[in-house]
Amino acid sequence: MLRYLPFLLVLAVWIYAFIDVLNTPEKEIRHLPKVVWVIIVLLFGEVLLGPIAWFVTGKARRTTPGSGPRAGRGGQWVAPDDNPEFLKSLRDEDPDEEKRDRGSEG
Image 1 (cartoon, rainbow, N blue to C red):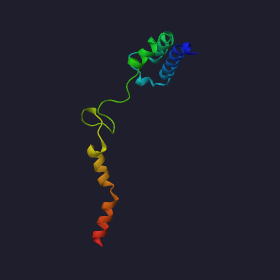
Image 2 (cartoon, one colour):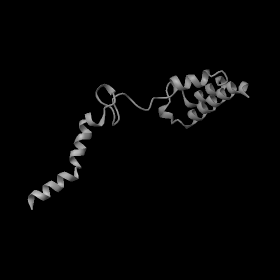
Image 3 (cartoon, rainbow, N blue to C red):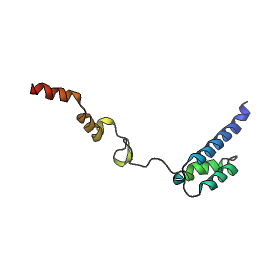
Image 4 (cartoon, helix red, strand yellow):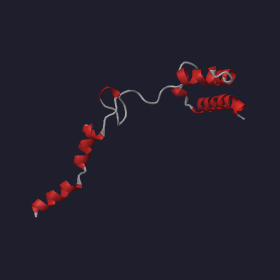
């Protein structure tokens, strides 16, 4: 049974890459048209050249450095207690502050 494992792993990567090419929108594909990538993955999938080429060069990356809620200076992750936007949102939504304001008025 163990002798079939390499074949099954190659087959799984091949199928995953093929489905990934088919499901990727045309605007996210780089360098070649989608049809050409399908052909490359199918023809060279058995030796993993097609899938590796697809994963390395064919598909555009989803995230860019410095984007997203967790990105800080230089694209690094920022802990919530160091993130000024997060701390500001806590101050804006603090229910205890509203209670204190109401208590001091009455």
